[in-house]
Length: 317
Image (cartoon, rainbow, N blue to C red; front, side):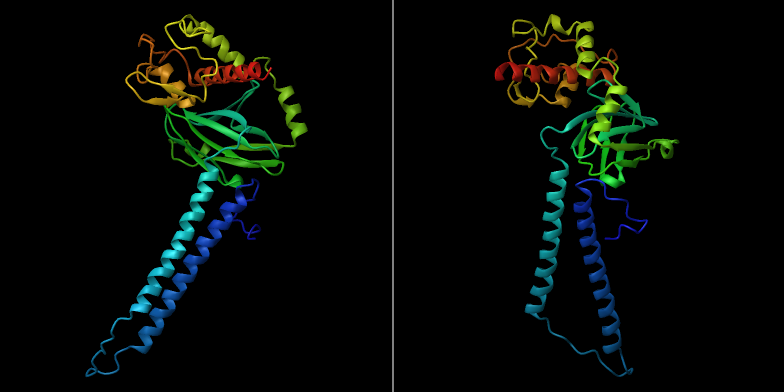
């Protein structure tokens, strides 16, 4: 429906038909009520026009059933819009388990994608068709916005924090990528493409671009070089907590409360270690602000995620 119109981009993800259906509904409701109001204005203007200077306007008493009708019906329609939109929003905000994870850093004026296997690419993103993909994104300078019209996804990319978005591409092809937030004088040039490949072709592409060092391995090397292992030992015997199995779990904090050990928490702990101190450990960790790049932080996070996988693998054996 409407796919041949140039105003509607191709539907290339599982979310695209759902977003379009909601848009069509909102458009149809808007057109219906706009037309209805226009017709009533014309009809009433003709029917109740003043026919002579001596004519007095008749007094029309209110109608409770009519007032209930025009209050309840719009309320019901707006509730349908709200619930429908909320369901789509929550689904767009909840990546499925097992989604392919790719890190993405925006900067003036380019997109840098980092795959778990170690490949990186600029203003391009290669993904397999038929598999959900989760992007963890941050910015090195100003606010950007990752926008792929064919997938119906758009998410702000913010400095000093992580945002995520996911999509499930349905067919192979090349799709345009834009920055949807004015980010500077060359904002219009911050474009690229998303290349959706058949799974076999994607695996072949991964092999051709392999660097020999995965994100987790690079993170492990950076972790060692920064001397993090001096305090974060395998057991809780160091001045910092053990990190194996930490990612994704709730952490008790000094002074009460807790925090989820996700990407944002780890990033904050690296750059502002005294913001949320783990209960039972002294606040002696120095900040690594200026010593590690955004790419480096993402590599360390990938390393900590791999520790979680290793722990699970050991538990399953």
